[in-house]
Image (cartoon, rainbow over all chains, first blue to last red; front, side, top):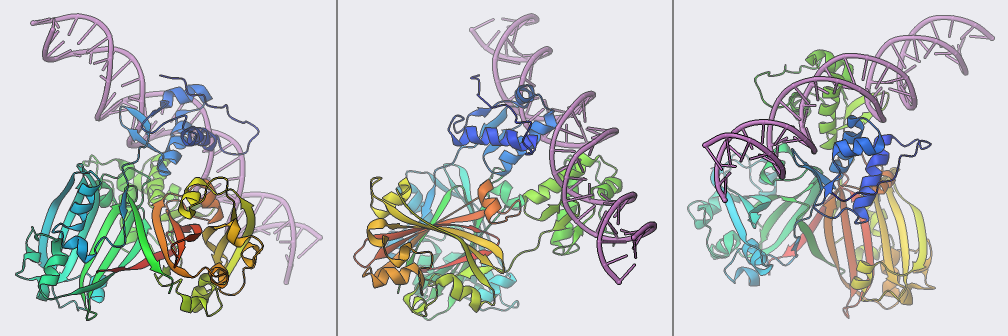
Length: 261
Length: 261
DNA sequence: CCGTAGTACACGTATGTACGAGTTGAGGAG
DNA sequence: CTCCTCAACTCGTACATACGTGTACTACGG
């Protein structure tokens, strides 16, 4: 393995040893001395280089992992994390003109970017809406919604999970309540049912993933998620769908256009 | 201190001991048994309860801290993290009608929500634009921009840092290059100078903060940041400003309206 | 009554040791 | 030549110990 030129510790510094070591490795990554996917020196090598205990090294590596800069692979080593291709979500991605092409937004976009899109884990149930969803849809807990949950993958890599809620009164018995919602997706179906869509409102939060989300999105440690809730409104002002999605922040850039007027 | 009812370890489980302990405490937080701001049992108490070494306890606590659920305070203990009031950024926040009230967006909004807004660390320089900014503004590295950097605080708590770049050709010698940009902020000044604003484009990423960002935003560990880049376009299609902002994801919900047409 | 020193307690940093478990490649058996 | 075993190397988990440093309360003395 190529020798990685790491500085020595500064004994006069009051900065903790493990932080100094993390700084050295972080610098190497940011300077490009350690490229994406490259192996960071092993714990044993770092122990020898710095003459410190293993726990000190592990602390340093944990700092970097928490920053999302590295990933440890059991039995193999620690590697500089590589970034997946980024999907840019434009604010016109749900425009009718795209929907009329007959493809759902995700499929069309991913194919356009040369990726192989997949959707799996499609589950459809009818149940009472969660409180926040009921509020957005103007329903009560006594009402019922069709719940469509699914997971989106690009080239086999999961990037997003989504759960849509549609008032059962609208969706029950329609193709919206079928696993394959047909060309153009559920928004096309809603319009066919006479619910002419006017606009969507998206609310975006970001946070560290829950354990369950880390699993289903195969997230590396130190990678936050976007939590996006989209509500679809018809021209008569009614909310007809709420879509709750969680996506890897690593794989997405969200883009929106704001009016100045 | 009130006794916290934590389960015992499951020796038959193949889940690591420190993860089981983290699970117990996480559950207590999520169930509300441990409320916001409340003290988690000390490392010594947990060691005794579970009969494990301190390192095992510290590992468990570090997991929770990495998830943003707790904060450790040196000499005091570990506490369930409390969430600051959330600022909701609406997609019309830069609408002209707000600007014409004579207040910058941040000030007006924060006062409206009953908070005490502050802006500090205002620094103005003229320099060559970073590559990505030059591209957005349609400039070359030979061009020069006025760079306005500042930090926004609510009730003394920093929530956002922002850096604006305006082509020097536009801003030089105007109030835009003054620390106090005057009523309505720099967007009002741009319009006075004849640059009629048409729309903004915002690009949103999220990631773990850099060390510098953790410091300037006083971020707790385990809290990601939004990295938002806004470009202002005039009615004749020219980009006249790029604003690069970093904000605590803890303090913000971003909200946007998307057209369905 | 107040301030200060002391003390108990909290987390932070660091050392050393041991064993478990996944990965890899070399070398020997067939 | 191929397959398998095994050793070596990797990170993961857990133990025990020590000392540093910040916090908060108490007891003492002025």
